[in-house]
Length: 436
Image 1 (cartoon, rainbow, N blue to C red):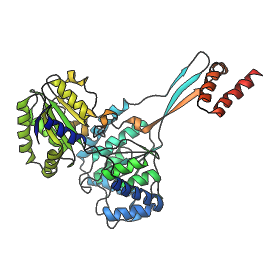
Image 2: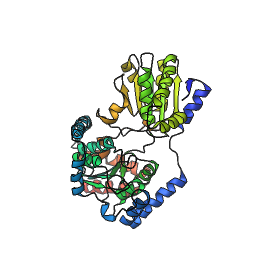
Image 3: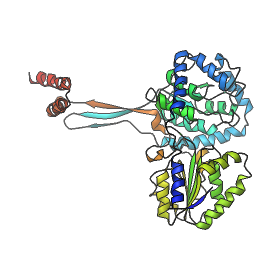
Image 4: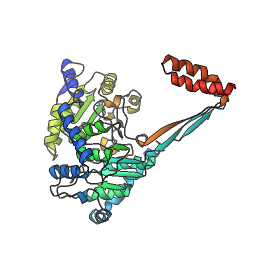
């Protein structure tokens, strides 16, 4: 993991490499995903079974597409009883945070009798994509919570979950229990692009949904991209990333541990330290190497750090903040003497973690804010998964005769300028009727 002075040509070269890991168009891969979507639209359940047998569970059968209530209940006997307390505490924190995001319908009136407003309603149904996690052996409990809880808070009545089965066709019991506890109505054991297709188009076994949310691999991401517009989606998630902004007050051990926490996700993950202190840069680099040897996913981490990791030594805090805003990281930790003074200068970040006792995993699992976050620089314009992703807004317009008479000529002028004579005629017909 290189230690580089910024600004410099070497630092700029590394920055460009990190920035260019943003997922671009891959026509060949997108074409393969498009073929999968077409197969599911055309063949329905038969396509889902075929893809699942080929890639996940060789003995998979059509009747397994929907997880039965009996299977869900049996899962309760297979989880550690202490898990329920942990699950409830995490759920309560996440729900409390997302309830603050709820907004109300609103209305306004004018003296001329005009009535305007906006009605907010939840979508009728939502689909949650939950990745398999090492063949189903590392259940992504937190992703179930982070996708289902805001949907429930928004008021979605039909929440479906899709997740790839394990090789024997089963689903990890911890996933089943979590889904049941947070209000998921139906669970389908399907994954990858064909699961997204099933949620978008529907099959005899999978009712279609209005919105699809949740992270996944490149096949899932491209599938969401291709069905977007037919259904709503949250965002196009890429590999995980973290940027730690630190000065001489930061602990190099903490910094190293936090960088590794994201690098272990994926060989494409990015882990960056930006520091004003040269000694911290050196100590953190040493800490990374030492800690790396203790971790089971060290090969994945080493590849990620070699390809998309960096330690940038900057001259002052202003440069550090500028660099952070340029990279617009998914996760930004601020470990400096006065982190609150920095916060107002941060414009681009998916989530910000402030102070030495707020490592990124606190947000991943427990604090309450959503961990489905914009990646690959998209925090410049995108936001975390929220209640808003499950809500639609309908505008309301009611004009009185007085208000209509006041605005009619102006509306007709605009319509004629746009060459839409029938629009103008609609207004004229009422004007003539009112003048009789």
